[in-house]
Amino acid sequence: MGNVFKISEAASIAIHSMSVVARSQSLLNAQQIAEQTGFSKNHTSKVLQLLAKNHYLTSTRGPGGGFRLGKKAEEISLMDIYRLIEGDLSESDCRMDCPNCPVKHCIFGGIDKRFTEEFRQYMESKSLAMM
Image (cartoon, rainbow, N blue to C red; front, side, top):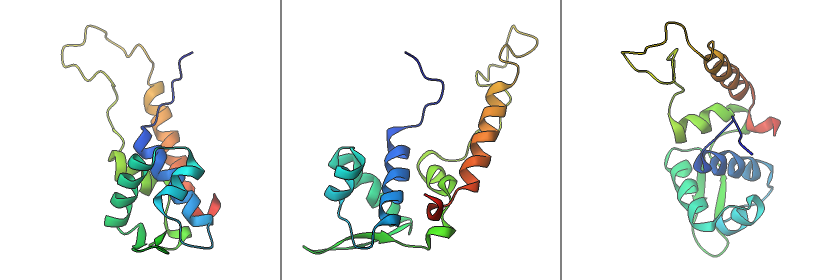
């Protein structure tokens, strides 16, 4: 069965990992985060490194090390995390973006633009503190 809403695995790992770390009272390592989220340790590790490099997480090395938030949970929106992984959402009116489109009016009636804007508003309105 198909699904209209798609989010990349990397973006999903980032958002879920940040949520897990935000709720934790102690440092969590990549293995623990991968176990809690159900993603592979290798992919989780790569995403966590990117989050740390961009100061959303801080990391401590060593046997007792792990990750913690690099900013307050209320200061990090889900959109901040999504944007780090995927970049900005498109402002285009057309997903096909073909200059010689044979169709005079969009077949989809702009629903993709409305969905994108609703998604953006939702993601910007939710902070990690709310998760």
